[in-house]
Each structure stands twice: as C-alpha cells, then as structure tokens.
Image (cartoon, rainbow, N blue to C red; front, side, top):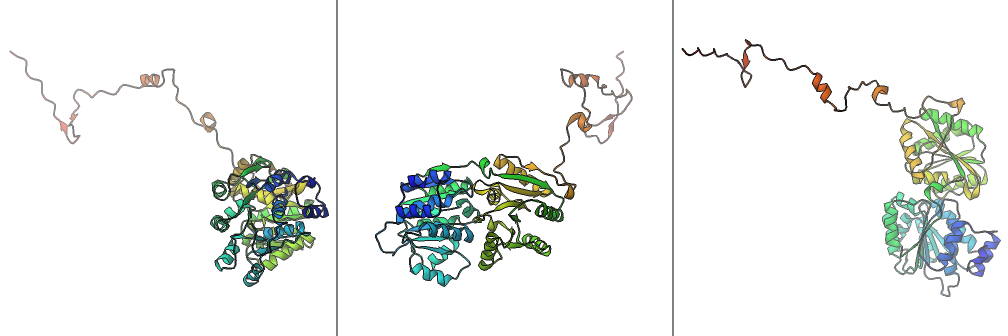
Length: 441
C-alpha cells in the first residue's frame, strides 16, 4: 500500500484519487530510499512504474516549502520530447492537490514562449538537454537553487550524444542535495562514467537483469530474402495477428515513409513518426494512436523511448536495431504492466550476425517462426563444412614416431653418374674432371 510510505497527505490523496493501490517493485524499492535523500542509480524495465518512483519523492521534498516561488527547485532531464511531455503529465497528476507548479522545455516549441514561462519560475522543470542548454546560454535559465536532479532514461541520453550536455547542466546545480538516475538497461562504460561524475555514493537498485527484461513478451524472428519480402511479411502479420495496436520500427526515415505509404494505400489506419516530423505532427500521431484513431504506428527509434500507449501489443522490427539496448527499448513498448505482447524481428542475410549478438546480450534465444504463406528461400547462414574426411581431404599416414616412417620410405637421392660433369659452386659452368694421376713407378 502507498500509505506505508512517509509521503505528505496531499500526495497520498492524489495517489488514492488516481487509484494507485499496490506499488510496483521498483516503486517499493526506490521510494523509501529516495525519501531519505539518498542518491539512486536504478535499473528497471520500461513500463515498470519508474516515473512515480522518482516523482513522488521529488514532490514530497517540495510540498512544504514556505518560500515564495522564486527559484527552480527540481530538474528532470529526459532524452525525447514525448517522454518529457508524459512526465509533465505525471507530475501534474500527482501534484494536483498541492501548489507545486511544473514547466516543460523541449525542442520543437516556441523559444520566446518558453523563456516567458521560465520567468514565472516553476518549482519543477522538465526538459530535454539540448533546448535547456539553449535557454541557459541565452541567460533565461538559472539552476543554482536546484535541490534535486532526476536523469531518466540516462542510457538513451548517452546514446543520443547528450553526455556533455547532461554533465554541464548538473554542474550548473552546485547546491543540489540529491541526484537520481534511472535507466531500462545497464548501459556501458559511458553510463558508468556519468554515474561517477554526477552521483555521490549512490544506492544501486537493479530490479531486472538484462535477461529478465520484457519477460511478458514473446520474441520471434522470421527470415526474409530482401526488403520487398519483408514488406509481404508485414502485410501478412497485420492481417492475421490479433492485436489492438501495433508499431513497426525501421532504422531510416525513408523506409518508415515507404512502409507508411504502402499501408495507407491498403486503407490501414496508420501514422508515421520520425525526426523529420514537426512537433505538431508528432503530437497528433501519438494522440491518434492512444485514442484509437489509428491502430498502426510506423516509427524510427525516435519513438522507442517515452512512448506509453495502452494496448500496444504487437511490435515488428522491420530493421533490426543497432544494439541490444535499443532492442530492449523497442520491445519494451509492448508487454507492459503484466500484459502479454508479441515482438517479431524480420531477418535478412545482413541482419543475422546482429540478431545473434543481441541474443547473446540478452542471454536468450528467440523463437524461430516460419509462415508458409510468405515463406522465402533464406533460412539462416549455411552450416560450416566439417574438416578432415568429411571435407574430402585425405590425411597422410603416420605412425607413433610421426614423420620418421614416411621419411624412411622416401627414395634416396640419386648419385651422379661417374662420368657426369660436375657443376661449379656458382652453377655457371661445368667443371672438367681431372684425370687420375699416373701410378708411381
């Protein structure tokens, strides 16, 4: 029960209003430590309730502030606009019975309007690193009074090249008392380096090992001959699988637009989401998907983080993601909150090694699936030929003494005939044989 946490009564009232009863494992583990003011480094799968795990302790720190709203007190950094917008909604829901105000700073919105919002000084500022730095450099953002920083989806921010931006923003908060870092994967050396720089003696909470991520999702691979064959498989899956909502991931914007065009031509209710779309189109796509106006979203990895849509139960990887962490975040869109999902990856010849490396990273073996109606010729790499007799190579006979027996059977080198001319040392001209000296008389 959430009532077991030492939360302010106004926050508990909001929790009850939102019908939150049992905390998820990540909430049960993180909230008590966060309320103590500890720095946290938390690894938990997407859809596990991470947002509430840091929002509630953060709001609890601010709810009884007696000062007037003259400084920003909390900063939340996220990798994408969509995730930032969803986090803002969560903060507003949990703070509905308090006087805490939150603001949003992301790319794709009017810069001057954001500057005007900053002059009103929200208690909690939520944003993406790039635009926050632009406002900081313009002199519109002041962070010296920030008490708590949250880095959500920190591994993704590193993947997107925000490491230096995040570090600088953290350095602009010299008086912070608490830093919490959340991610869905364990990350690599870059994440460990960031943890060492921005966290102080953190408490490490790993709620899921990599091999346990997305346990509620069936993971399958289907081999394909080429991209046109992949498109046929996609059409078959959309026609024959049972799903409420589906998302198709590609690695390029061009391919996303191509697939989207084919779907629209066949009267599917679909939207496309990638980096070339402006903020208005991105909002429209996600809202239509959430409200049921569209059943299918075609997207690049820009939508892999921060997309929280109920009923999203089918993920198709038209292109394999470029890393194991990206794969985890893609399939994390389905099988959320205990629900089951299906993730299907389409594998051509050039995808096999990448797929195998992701299997090793996750310590899992994906289910191999064949659809007879759209079966191709490619079924995976050919088996390596066996050595020795199986490969048609005859071995030389040897005994226990190795090569001695063979050497013994070799013919001796032919001796020169008695009357044959001898070669000179330099091999240029034959030497004349000397006549034997006459016998002594």
